[in-house]
Amino acid sequence: MKDIIITGGAGFIGSNLVRAAIEHFTDRRIVNFDKLTYAGNLENLAGLEKHPRYCFIKGDVAEPEDVARAFAGDVEGVMHLAAESHVDRSIHDASPFIKSNVLGTQVLLDAARLKKIHKFVHVSTDEVYGSLGTNGKFTETTPLAANSPYSASKAGSDLLVRAAFHTHKFPGCITRCSNNYGPYQFPEKLVPLLISNALENKPIPVYGDGKNVRDWLFVEDHCAALMRVYESGAPGEVYNIGGDNELENLTLVRTVLRMLGRPESLITFVKDRPGHDRRYAIDASKIRRELNWEPAHKFEDAIRKTIDWYQANPPWWRRVKSGEYREYYEKQYGRAM
Ligand code: NAD
Ligand code: TYD
Image (tube, rainbow, N blue to C red):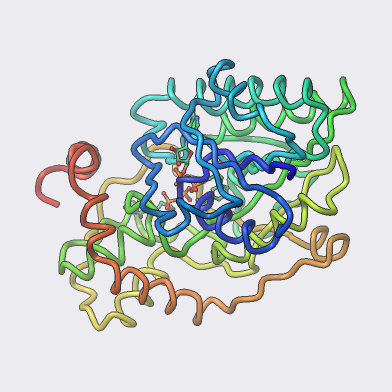
């Protein structure tokens, strides 16, 4: 049986993708390769441990010996999600972002090229394009203009995948998706932080004036797009992925509070993120047209489903919000929060 390696499979999008890929690729083994950083959590995959077509390998994408263990089988392809992923952490310390996101991607590319794999889907972000004004959307040809250490490290990794294609005819595709929300997202990101704080009647920190705009996509729609690119994406191509669902942060916060029946007085404006990108918006017409993908979920239904999941799983987010996360939270927002 052939292997598909999913890096970062214990994280938010990765764990949703591992589940979807096991269902979708019924004649392949899914190898989850993950370092289990603070953001990686095997509880996200509870129930899959004994699945005959699932395998977990603990390792670091930036360590060639670890990566060699992941490539020991008959590897058909890779979907690469492993990364340090939080902008605010990259502002405190960029070095893990450079090691995991930039070096890690090159180590993985080298191993994948040696193995002559069939497809490599590099999962990137719309943040590599920088910030938009009030008009326009990011297309695949928008110049890269990353503004945070996180997005700069992702842009660097995108260029390494591009270089592997041009230099070695390596079968790499790059995807650039907008902000995701859904079950199993680490509560340092806006949506799960908002839901879990609201459930505990704790303040909701909103950066700056709350008018920054993000284009929100349900995680299962992102996973479906990634599998479509894995199967049918053309090597060397970039595919933007987005839900045509732009919302100001304050609108999103108010919507969730209303759905939870919690008061707007929980909203607390805090100091803005340095270099905070004002607006992201994705033009996803290429993947819609060429790969026949479109989001299957409406925002109103999927945010409800997401809220229901966090309401039903407080032990999951309470455990995640203890320990090391607590220290980060206090450093980021101060003890008063
Ligand atoms: P996440 O932080 O929830 O998960 C990242 C996973 O990668 C964790 O399981 C972690 O243990 C693992 N990891 C980190 N460094 C590693 C290393 N050196 N070696 C092996 N594993 C390592 O992130 P996420 O939100 O699920 O994002 C996954 C990918 O999707 C990232 O590449 C991110 O840039 C991209 N992306 C995310 C979003 C979003 O809204 N969350 C949007 C677009 C793109
Ligand atoms: P985030 O979930 O960190 O994603 P990204 O920065 O990658 O877009 O943040 C989404 C938006 O929400 C962004 O404009 C920053 C803002 N934000 C807050 O206002 N308060 C918070 O506590 C967090 C984590 C984010």
